[in-house]
Image (cartoon, rainbow, N blue to C red):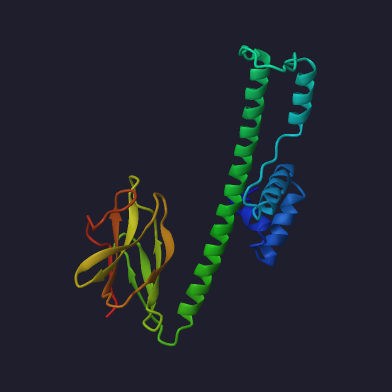
Amino acid sequence: MTAETHALLGAYVLDAVNDIERAAFERHLRECEACRDETDDLRAAAARLADGTWSVPPPSLRTNVLTAITSTRQVPPVSVPAPARPANPRWRQLTVAAAVVVAVGGSVAVVQEQRVRHEHADAVSARAAEARIQALLAAPDLTVREQRLTSGGKVTVAMSRLHDAGVIMLAADAAPAGGQVYQLWTVRSSTAASAGVLVPGQSAVVQIVEGMSGVSDVGVTVEPPKGSAQPTTEMIADLKLA
């Protein structure tokens, strides 16, 4: 299984794939038992998202508790207050064990729920971004400019003043060396503001930038990991919009 196919698992469970992706993933499911099991687990977790508080104790918990009761000495009933007795060590162990089992089971359920929520948020975000880009590219006042990077590759800016937004498309020939990253900038009145930071090893990105009014330049620099508050190196591209 390729990493690209595996990445479809969450989107497939949430029905956030197109017909081609669905057919490809279902073909893979017929051949991969591990992915079938993971798909079933995520579907079960997704089905419970509507319930704000849910917990599924393991099936063995009830059996274990009932078995322990039959072999654990019961405290006789009393009609008058009696001196406190030391807690039965075995019962205390059983109680702790049961609490641990429930906690572990609950933790697994929470992790599955969080994963489904993240997958769902990613799918919703991707769809919103795609719709926004399509709207921008269909704008009647769309302007497109591009410039070569001094390090190889190019940066393209498609901008609509009616939408007050633009799309920056970076396609470098290679990622920066030494763990450094590309950072995008918008420039207003000679002041640069970050428009996005790539991760180490990344050489291409499509970035939506809202509020493009007053932006005179779009630039690209090479920065330390996680980017910088202001450019620390010379721009390898300085695309003039005006």
